[in-house]
Structures are given as structure tokens and as C-alpha cells.
Amino acid sequence: MQFGRLKRRELITLLGGAATWPLAARAQQSVMLTIGCLYVGSPEAYTGRLAAFRKGLDEIGYVEGRDVAIEYRWAHNDTARLPGLAAELVKRPVTVIAAGDLPSALAAKAASTTIPIVFETAADPVRVGLVASLNRPGANVTGVTNIGAEIGAKRVGLLHELLPGAVRFAALVNLSNPLLAEASIKETQSAAAAIGRQLEILTASTDREIDSAFTSVAQKQVEALLVLPDNLFSSRRVQLVIQAARHGVPAIYSNRDHAEAGGLMSYGANITDAYRQAGVYVGRVLKGEKPANMPVLQPTKLEFVINMQTARAFGITVPPTLLAIADEVIE
Image (cartoon, rainbow, N blue to C red):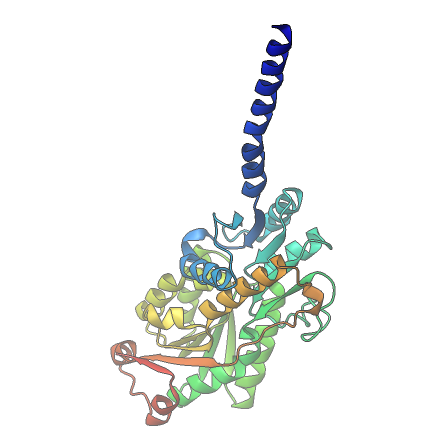
């Protein structure tokens, strides 16, 4: 009888242990890779861009919540918070950091020399020190550039062609993003000087300062405005468009979101597609590729968008030459 009892106990023990195997296996399977997403802005301003980023991840086989977890960190347009937020992601730790703008990319790079970093930025990543070269970035950083700061001359030219009689130009820039601001100002000033136009530099780093800048536009009798590339201006596109209309100043912006929101014109890369490409690159890193060997992606096409409803509201007749080269005319 004792032998039988022992055998039964052993059998129960064995069965009990076997019952835990599937649980352990499921626990192992539930451990997902983690992406850290770092942004200088606020989540409500990035809805479309995040959808594009997730689409890029999906294209390469990763779905949030199924294959990967994503930790989001938002600075709410306070760049001083970015180093601390980047440090949180490094401590977490995450498998890769996706930095959605230049300040975030610089903060992530300063926080880790080992965790892979994939950025999206309007700046020249070589000039600002993110990578050693576009073809062979080196180290742990690569990403996508939409060269927003490098095409300022083209925006000046488009605005001049639309308003050939305008003399007083102004450029709106965010000095809290100094490296991007410096490159954008330099490019725009050179282009304005080349056509003999005055260029007033207006600065804004907060919502309130944007309103103040437009008060200056009216006081200085600015006839044409360039809103230089910056994530603050992307997130406040409705405010910018309303202020431009209120103060009667025709403006050109850096991406189509502004034209779709009622801005007069935009010229630049497709930012939504740039975020999709960043998602693809993050997926490739998760599969084992090294950022050092992944060339920085550049836009293959720049979009010129004209909002004709806004042009009519300003009483502007758009020359046929501009309509002919527009990628899209919003009626």
C-alpha cells in the first residue's frame, strides 16, 4: 500500500510540474521587444505621423501590442525635459529608440551610445552631428531626413513668384531648436538677399509667442511670410493659419499639413511618408540590422501644394506657371 501511495504522489508531482510547462512557455512568448518613442511635442499633434510610423512597422512584420511594445515619452514642446525622458527610456531599457525630431534625436544620442536610435528630422544629420555620413552613419544612429532646412531657397523663390511686388519678407523660426533654426535662417537669408528682398527674422518658442510674432508682422508691414520647419509650428498649424489670415499676410509653410489646414502654400517632403520610412527602419533594426550600416534615407520627391480657396480669400491670382508645377491644388 505504501508503495502504491508513493507512486501516486510521484505521479501527482510529475503531473503538477507538467501543468506548469505551458504557463512558462506562454510567459516566455509574452515577453516582447520594446520600442521607445521620444518626441519634443504632444501626442495630439502626432496622430497622423504615429499612424504612419506604425504602418511602417507593420510593413516589416511588427504590430504594436502583438509583436512589440511601445513606450512613449512626450516633452510637450519643452526641450529641457528631453534629456530626462531619454534617460528613462535607456533605463527601461528599450530595444531601440525612435526619435521623432532633431531635439529628441540629439537627446537620445547623448543618453546612449549602445541602444540603436532611428530619427526623423528636417535638419542635415551630418551638419548637426547625428551621423558621420549619410551613406555610412557609423555608431548607433541612423534615420530619415526630410531636408526641410536645406530647401529654404526654393520656398523663397515660390513666394517671390507668387508675389513679385512684395519687398518686405519675414521668416518665423523657433530658436529653442537652435541647430535647425540656424540652418533654416542661413538658407533663407541668402535666398532673400539674392533677389534683393529684406528679410525680418521673427522668433517664437511657445503658443503665446506665435501670436506675438504675428503682431510684429502687422507692425512691420510684412508682405510675405515664410514659416520655417519646426515641430512646434507643425503642431500649431491651425493657430498659424488663423493668424496669417487675421493679419492678412500670405505665407508658405514647410509641409502639406499646413496647406490642408488652410495655409496658402507649402513646399517640402511628405512628412507622413518620412515617419512610415522611420517605422520600416525601426523594424529592420529589430530584425538585427546595425544602424551604422543603414544609410540615412532622403526624400525622393518634394511636394508643392497650393490652397486656391485661401488664395482667393487673400485676393491673390496664382500665376499659371505656379499652377503648372503644383503637385496638388486644393480647391
